[in-house]
Image (cartoon, rainbow over all chains, first blue to last red; front, side, top):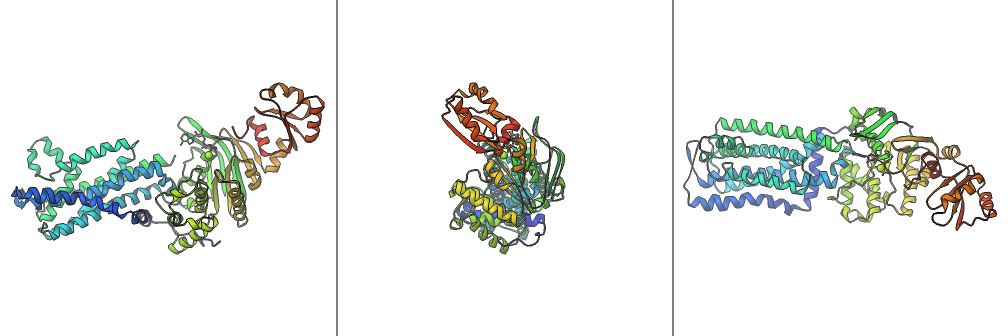
Length: 266
Length: 304
Ligand SMILES: Nc1ncnc2c1ncn2[C@@H]1O[C@H](COP(=O)(O)OP(=O)(O)OP(=O)(O)O)[C@@H](O)[C@H]1O
Ligand SMILES: [Mg+2]
């Protein structure tokens, strides 16, 4: 039997994450139809609400600029597609691998560490969200819903959104005990989607506490970030959003790693 | 290869490993023999550098698992007690991806995967999903997978549990060859025949402690007689009859279904039993095994 000659060089964090992505890629290669569904939802909302309801509404004022309704809704759906895509893999699938498949136990028998697993899985969630967003952005361009060259930065922005949600949702998933617990995620997902200034401006919440709360939620940060970039009305709010999402992602990543340590290295 | 001193493992208040000293030398086959819950798997997981040591000292391949985990694991092959295969991948991809986790390049991984499919005798299942394999095939795949990185040290936690007798013998033969090729083996088992066949040296573990250590032959010589006469009587009679045969051997063990009389001359024991007018339903004279050593050391049989 041929022997593996010499000891392979230790994996760098980047190559380790690439291996986890490769593993997930091989799994999805034979189930690519599953991959499509996550993309459809925001697209349907864009057509039904953005275009459909847009026939009845002139548009909204955004940072003092008048924007047609579809142009207003589209960036929100762009952020949502990153959000949805990131959630798909970092919740149910991670739970399945962690509790039932014991996939991470298998990986920990190799030189891979819990940090590698955290980074790899979050990267995959991030990539899935980003792929959806990239496709969505193309649809927006094709439909003339993009008004500025700033929109080029919308792509990295969605990567950031996908990173932040992928990390935090994976972290939350490590506390899940049963499939029922995922109702809580669905319960949080719906209001986040509906009230993050997705379909109407945040001014609708008045000037009180409620608006402050909405402005502090993560999907809202993603939505304004995308909206400022695709409409070209960029303000300091984008900077706030970027910092917010970066911090959220990093905290999520660190928590995931610590949780995997406690759960798996017993 | 492995050196443990005062090694302990606790889970909360419960101490699964209560201070053991183990020394495994390069190229030998070393066994942990013990009943359920003895702490074998807990010890193996510490050696595999996935379970932090609670206290005591542990060095593997000269390194400290607490700080050099990835480097140690890169040189280990691990076959865990429960198969941890990737059910979402094909049989071939299971081997291939696992090899990649070690940082082995694509081409070598592919070659190794093909070789190991042969090794596990599941080449025809290469494209099948793991879910569709039989239990024994999964076990063989797990064992094959542990060899993907040509490990220096192979840890096998109950490797043959779930294999049919023929597959077991094939595996023993394969493990023997690996040993000849210089791979150090550490095996846990509750099959004494497996331990006798495979292990140069072993420890008998019970309730988190080491009850005895040595080669199978040494252990048998030290803790048992050459032969054993097994006497089977009617249900419930064994306890009462024990004292009637007590003087015939060095020692008598009462099991629920039979009496074991330890003597260097088993046949003479059986003759004497019959001469006393006792009428066992069945008798058997056999050589002492590690099972007897275990019975002697712990007062319980391995199957408990
Ligand atoms: N993660 C854990 N948390 C709590 N207790 C544990 C854990 N792992 C093992 N134990 C306990 O430690 C003891 C030793 O378990 P271990 O798995 O090491 O035994 P074993 O010798 O491998 O037994 P078996 O032959 O059944 O595999 C058992 O009582 C078990 O319940
Ligand atoms: Mg065990």
